[in-house]
Image (cartoon, rainbow, N blue to C red):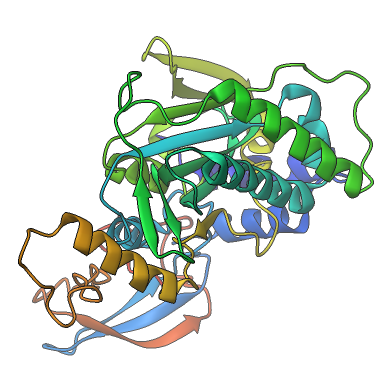
Length: 382
């Protein structure tokens, strides 16, 4: 396993020189953060045990959302919050992909076109739900933007976890998809989804004044598959929501100016290896850093965080539909939620007690060996 920080430290200068005209401020900030993450060369914090008063200096984690060390707790919290909002019924994972001919344009206008990709995907699903014979209402969905393929190439696409149900707020009706001859694994026709999404995305490009390439594919790729209750789909999406696009265990070698990493092929389910120069590898990883402030995950429809009234109505309707006859909900049944997992505590090495951070952002620690890092059990997020 090769630390990503070691690769950044070795190839950063050459990378900045070679890609000086195209590197974004957000990518430069990510480099600076991950290079010093949990390092003795970065800032530290003073922690004191509540039991034995033992003190020690702990290096800060960078907290960057692309760092393979950080954001594990935030990822788990996101999964828990989204799982609490699951509604009864079948869920579908729907994927909209930008064709290869448009990827360079998306890379040049990331902030605009990442948003356009997510909004057009949601608009397409909302149109299909409103026109569906059984649903005839407004749906809800959890969308997560991905910019990479398994091989780490630039491959922007968006996944939407959507229940096969819709809410008619005006008539106060909750409609779900009934079983059909095609089985539970069918919601929308993926070819029809692709055609509507293609038209919406191209119309957005024209409205933004961006030039379309001379040749565009006639067929765009979408996928719509049933994922059961939706919990496994949320775990899958949460896994790639934070912590970057590659795990350090998948970086196999760094020698003679070359970096070798592995990925798992989606068809054969076997690991493949790829070797390229350190600068090229760094560019491959850094091109997936999102613009500053851009949210990779968004909730739409009745699953939006601001739709509290709709959620209260939804929970009431769903309870009435699924509760046994003759039963009534408890007064706070629709608002009662299990507690979220607490953030891990920093423990004392002497007595095992909980340590409290007394001071943050102390000047770099010069007594420890350069590049020294704590393991994940000892580390506490800033």
